[in-house]
Amino acid sequence: NKQVSELSEQENPWVIFVETLAPDSGKKELPPFDKDSDVLLFLKFYDPRTKVISYVGHLYVPISAKANEIVPQLNRKAGYPVTAPLLLYEEVKPNLIERLQDLSLPMEKLLDELMDGDIIVFQRDEEDLAQYPLPTPKEYF
Image (spheres, rainbow, N blue to C red):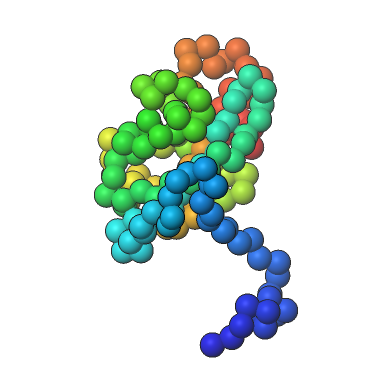
């Protein structure tokens, strides 16, 4: 076993995610997480009007959950009605993004090599997306 300070001297800079409770949440502990049946997903929202991608939080999701089951939570994070239609993408690696087509599939089948820390990028599905110079996150990247 090594201390973090020993490891950090030998490695490139680390990116560390620290989850905290909001002071006004009224909760005393973080939500439960089962490493065998849950996955931690980071979320980014893309707005084609402003051509901006923003980090909007994270979710713990059962790996067996269908992608369309998280759409209401994504809509809340974006400030949309919970039933607003969304387009979802997986950020496979920096500057490479793939559209998630069949949102009725379980997360474990929909995302390649599902693992903690995967990034879901989402945007509102609009009929007139073609009017924007960068209509989807694929063009943004």
